[in-house]
Length: 349
Image (cartoon, rainbow, N blue to C red):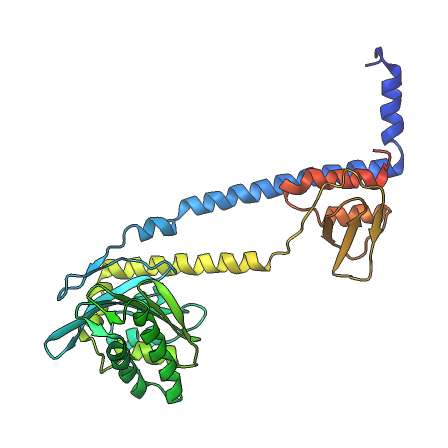
C-alpha cells in the first residue's frame, strides 16, 4: 500500500514491468493462461463425451465364445489383433472329422452376416474398414505335415488366379510349422491363417511361420471356407445364424461404430504435429536456422537436446513473442515455454 515497508520493492516492480517489451511479455503470459484453460476445457468435454457412450471393452465383454457342435471345441469371442468371432464349423472328409474351424473378422463382416452372399463378399474384401479375416483350425484327426499342407493347398489352387509357385510357398510354410512340432499335426494342434490384401500369414501352435505374400491369395483362402463350395458348410451356417438376429445386429452395429471411431482417433493422432519442449536452464545463446519455413529447429548450447517449434520465422524480437503465442503447446509443456519466453527478454534470468 502507500505505506509499504519496502518502497524499493514497489519501485522495482514498476521499473521491471513498465517498459514496452516487459508489457509484451506480460500479455504473452496472460494469453498462455487462456490457452491452458481452453485445453483443459476441451479435455474435460472429451472425457464427458466418452463417458456418455459405451466403451469398446464393455461391449466386447458381452460377446460369448462358440462351441462347435460336432467336435465340442470352444473358440474364444475375440482374437488378439482385434478381430471378432463370426462363427465355427467342422471340416469333414467323408465321415471323418478332420478339424474344427472358426472365422474371425472385423465388425463390418459381422454386420454383413445376414446372408451367405453378403458374408462371403465382406469377408474376402480387404480395405481400410476391414483389413483382415482370420481362420483358426484345431485338429481333431491327426495328419502328417505334407498331408495337411497338401489338402489345404489343393483347396486354394482352383480359387487362386496367381502362379502355382505362390501356393507352393503357402504349403511350405504349413509343412515347416508342423515339422517344427515333430512332423505330425496331432489332435489339439492349432493353425491360424490371417488373410489380408497382402497375402496369408501362417501360424502353427501360436508360432508364426511367415507370410505367403501374394496379391489375391488372402481372398482365395477366404473363398475356401466362404464360397458356394465351402469345405465347411457348417461354418457358413454358424456365421449367418449367429449374427442375423435382431440383438446380434444391434451388437454388430455398436461394434462397427466404436471400431470406426477408434480408427478415426488413431488417424487424427497420427496426423498431429509432435512438439518436444525441453528446459534450457543452462542456455547461454540460442542459434536459429530460418531456412526451414515449416519448422525452425532451435539448438541450445550446452544442452544435448533440441526443441522444434513450428513458426513462420523465428527472430529475437517482439515477432518472436507472437510466434510463441500462436504455437503454444498443451499445458504439460507450458512452464518450460514460459521459461523460454522470459529468457528471450531477460537473459539475466
